[in-house]
Image 1 (cartoon, rainbow, N blue to C red):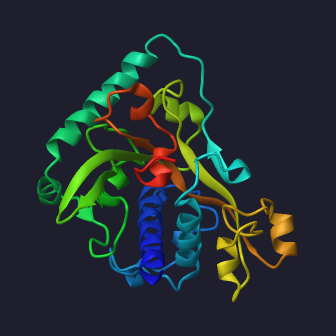
Image 2 (cartoon, rainbow, N blue to C red):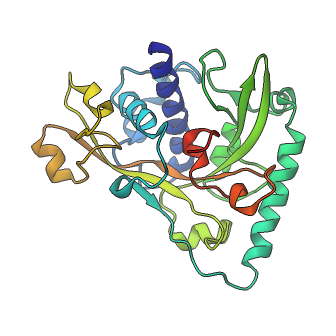
Length: 268
């Protein structure tokens, strides 16, 4: 159980770092996780994490809540609207798929990914999907979209080897749906954000993991007023825009699956 929670905390901190990298040049910091107020010179080294910090605890509960649940999380999930197709959408999306497929072929051998600057996030902690993240690409994604440069490569671990199953692209939380549509047509892909999180009061963190919880991303509380009335801490937005792509799949629906990423590659 301890290892499982550590893994969840670690992935959460990874995504926090990506969010900071992407919005570090924005005048609008991430609500509820405003990294601009922290002295980053004292931040934990990549791969270590600080589960004791407020943001670390928030991220841990976010990831734990998401771990085995469908992407449709009601008031706690914000997804882009699936639009009607426009002329050229299919072709634009296919170019992204082809680029991602080339990335997947290039990095089937995880050692190649390591040699090209991707870093395994907590390789010694058991996880269902390991994020190999390129922090330069994460930063670059705040300003431009290059499908040849995904923020993270997604691998399953099999013994001492890693099998690439997908890629993850990110975008700044300040982006509108029109901005995201310019990157990948919203008639094909659905980006997502995690929103309206109410963290439990100090000393009651485990309540977010209980069945029929009030707190957390599975909780019934989804407004600031109700959260504060119950002694919680409200986070209107967690992390930035993300989209998962599984370029080695044959079926288009599987390539752009919106729920597979939240079950970490194992389906519902």
